[in-house]
Length: 361
Image (tube, rainbow, N blue to C red; front, side):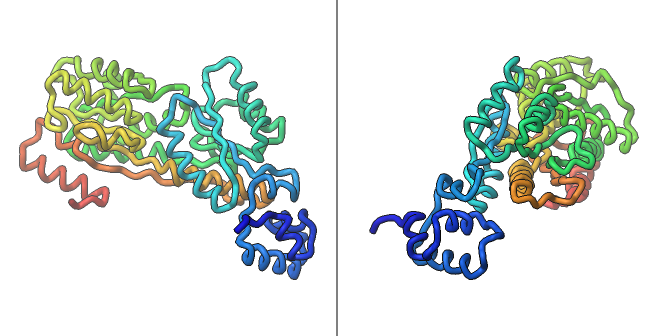
């Protein structure tokens, strides 16, 4: 049996092809009785529209672009999972636009890709979501966009973000609750502005736990495994009485680098050193021991970003002033009580930390 076409639907419903396309696109100007007649024929013929047929009802391409930095492949995978689900339900297709955020021709590359794909709108991921010249170019060319995880998001109707600062404070407090008094921190890549909130959260957590900020326990990283190795060496080569008993890294790749250094130095994790990360990337459960981390809801954030963008394209702006998706602490084998605590206190502190975060096993 031949596949039904839009022409077949138009012929049986006794309407124009353009009217069929308007019904498919849910254009409000179509009369209710005409809409119902076309929908009955669509169901009868089991017709499935393609993007080009849908575009006949107007200037839309029914394509959503996703701008991402090509050095963050795992992050892009999480974003794509959320965007695809939402766009598929709305009968939109997704076009990926990999970018090099450090390229001198970044803006020209982005705008050329958007023009060539004819995307109706784009979702902008970090660190691109904080690059002002990209946002300015999109606005200048009237390209609708929604940002994921920008650093500045107060009263911004066009961004979705997570509670980096609050969740980082809670992770630091949990490490303190386990008895750690020297908690090291690896700052994330300064080009990724949102990760600055994680450092602020670390400082908040220290203050809430009654611990002083020791700048010798803070090292700059760049979100990569290699930078985590370098930072881990700096922290773990401090004299034993000043060396951290726990290290909290701004992302999982750097935390994995710390694990590698600890293994090479003969330090047992978590008996001698606790290590925590951020993101809950696939890597976090693949390393040994598996990483305690903060699960960033990237697919959920991306799905919501796609919903916001689709509302914009339909002329239905979201009226809320903040689009926040909560992150959650995930405890695995890389963290435990501080090594200098008596065994009875170590057992109690482990149990207390887990209960505090809702984990009883």
